[in-house]
Length: 442
Image (cartoon, rainbow, N blue to C red; front, side, top):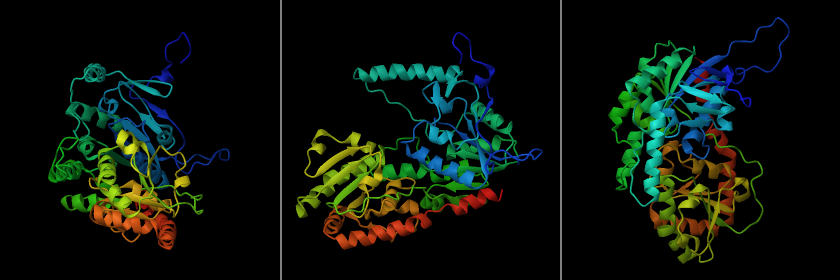
């Protein structure tokens, strides 16, 4: 926006489209008189901000976007006009996500540069209420903040979102999350309808209740979630166990498992270093529980067998560690690590003592890509079906976990064998050609 002037028409986005790039297959200038092939569009409807690459749900979404482009589709993101902003009246799209998007439709908003500003009084009202609650919380008050993560849109916003999508022709329309799938029923588009399920709220709630904890979102049953997604012709799942759980309740739809896309690390460290255990993780309830279990229940057992053992903890999950955790023998908090290859290789043993899980445990795939032997509880592998069962050591309970870790720390040949097998096979086992073929066939 030019100084001293209001935003130009090109900067205002009142349900207007911002064109980002040509569609897949466009490789540059064409001979004079040759028309560019029309891109095959897919409308992806979302109801959250897409600014945080540290969040697991955005990492899943990035895999979907890349697979759609691999399948010959240009992606148009259509934001829910109010829910997408959450409790902030402004948002931006993370550059990594933006790089995979062809167009953006953000109804009831003003676009200035890379920032979208809501024009909805409802969003601004939520923002003011959130500020007041935050002020009260900082003065010692307990103010519960209700999550809308699994709540369907109200009829007015659902209709507005459906209309915004319908105005832009596409071959495929995908609702992100099951709670947006009912919007597909409101659409008049003749496109193939799909839903992207990278967290089944019903199974997530079950996992929390199994641990004696209250779910951190609205609690629904598997049958209720199945009813939400029935408008979809194609169901895309981020985990194999969720596909197995929900697809039998929706026999009219095709279910496809989208494998996690973990980047290769060609320069993984393989030189001779002191063996150590490694725990990777972003900050969320499942990782926090796993880390606490590791530090409180497993690590003391490891030290009893191998007092000089080292445990490296990496990622934003370090922020939940207590001062006492930092003084535990052998424990080293690394925080966020820019180059994971520097802590990978056969000398590092990846740990996944996961007890609360929903979706896919990305850390397991990350460990294997990094050439790290991996020890896991069975729940950490459920999202992969049986694809990785022989690449990780699976144990039950803290005693077995500690014993296996202590043994591997002393087994140089065993670690090297597991590392080489994982590096050789993980890429083919997690390839997404099946889903890309679905997109090509539209």
